Image 1 (cartoon, rainbow, N blue to C red):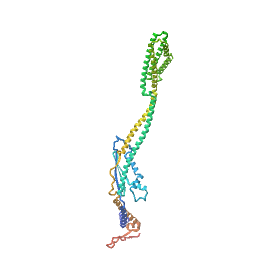
Image 2 (spheres, rainbow, N blue to C red):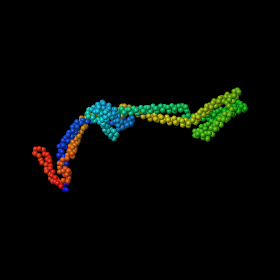
Image 3 (cartoon, rainbow, N blue to C red):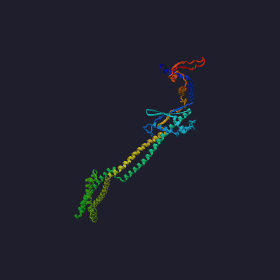
Image 4 (cartoon, one colour):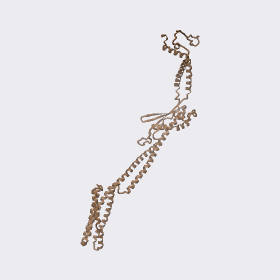
Amino acid sequence: MAGEHISASDRLHSLFGALKYRLRLILIVFAVVFAAIALYVERMPNVYRARTQILVNPQRVSDKYVSSAVSMGANERLNTLSQQILSSSRLEKILDEFNLFPKLRGQISREELIDRMRKNIAIELKHNSDGLSSFTLSYTGDSAEEVAAVTNKLADSFITWNLHDREQEAQGTTAFLANELGSTKSQLDGFEEQLRSYKMKHLGELPDQMQANMQTLARLQVELQANTEAQSRLDHEALLAASIAEPATQRAPATGASLRQRLVTERANAQADLLELRKHYTESFPDVVQKQTEIQSLDDRIGKLPNIDASTSASLDSQSSVSPQLQLIRRDRARLVNEQRNIQASINRYQSRVDSSPVREQEISQLLRDYDTARDHYRSLLEKNYSAQMAAQLEHDQQGGSFTMLDYARVPDAPVGPKRMPLLLGAFFLALAAGIAVAFVSELMDSTVKSELELRDALPGIPLLGITPGLAQTSGIRRALAPTRYLLGGQ
């Protein structure tokens, strides 16, 4: 039915009517809640914050001259320092030094006090194109003088521990390099002693003496050749002198001496050829083997000849008619023979040195390789040790990268919290919402019918015949709603 249709405006009017009916309750709840919150906000303690800015200084001496011994950058170092300084042990010292949180002592544990203090510390980083340029350190608390003192203490701790850690790291690097340098020097001295002993043991057989040995060997070959030729001349002179002074039957020893000298000359020539071949070929080369066989054959032939010097000396002793010229020739020849033996011994000795040079070269190359490796490592450590010592001195003189406090934290003039105006504004809306909520709950709990809409909702099948309007009370008294009478009709 059209008469029974309930519009949205009717429902809105009914809602406003209910609020108007509960206005006094809403105002009472609003006043109580707002006053309680406002009183709490007013009694909240003031919160102060002190801050200081710490500048990150680069190394004052250029890296071109002194390399820093500190491996970590500014960001990593700040993180490490933050963990050290904000550790429980160091915060506990500051907590006791300034007697922080006196009202909470005894109520909560020391770990909770330290956690609360750690939460009140804030670090803000500032970067530029080169990395970390500075950072701001702040501390929050309920006392203006206290927050300034704690902030300055924390800033001093950052600066002091940064210098201490940098110096300790530089000294640790220097100590490590010095230890390595000493160990490497001992190893190098051992290699030097081995090399010196080897050179002294095989003196003359070393590869760098090969050229000198070859030159000496060539010179000895020339001397041997000259000695052989000189002996040959003396033999001819002796034969000539003997032919004049002696009978023909006594010339046989001279003839034997001439044969001996010829064989010695051939052996010297073969020895020179062998030396020349060894310059170009190994010992297993056929020409070298053949020449060695030839020299051995000549040695055998020379060994089978009678001792011409002994027989000649005996004949000289038995003959008193030998000329002085012949005696002088024989004496010079004996001297040349002795020199020949010495030259041949020297040739054999130098030839042995030349033959041993390849073996010595292989043996000494291993010693030199180990020695050169140890020497290069020692030189590298020596340079690094010098650089580390300069870096340690740089850190000791506080010329390295450091932190500098731009300004000490000042006692704050005004608190940073609590923000009372926003809190009061929030309290206003909260109290208003609480009053409306209480009115709404009260309205839901009230079972009386106060409007036509509620009546129609309560009796949907009974038609409404009429409404008796409310009557105003006596003038001068606050207007109140009089009971409204509803006339209901039957079916």
